[in-house]
Length: 68
Image (cartoon, rainbow, N blue to C red; front, side, top):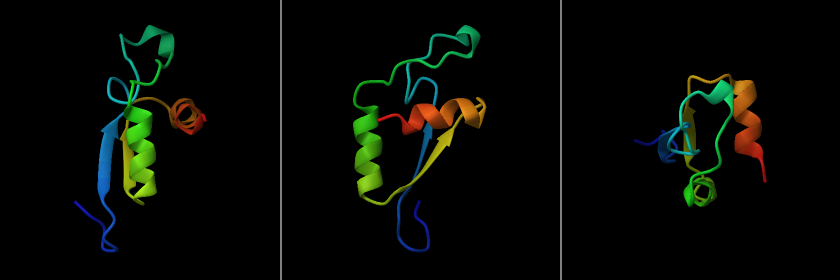
């Protein structure tokens, strides 16, 4: 799928795709899955429109996604 401007649209789940997930664990987020942050950075470099699906609160996920 692409946007009218031609950019790719990429949708990724948070738990179990971007980070390790072994159950709710009091809402703690897991470590990044090896290679996934590299993939997201590569997609950003291509100007892809990235959607992150999650049932978590955005206030929990946003800092995790923005960590260096």
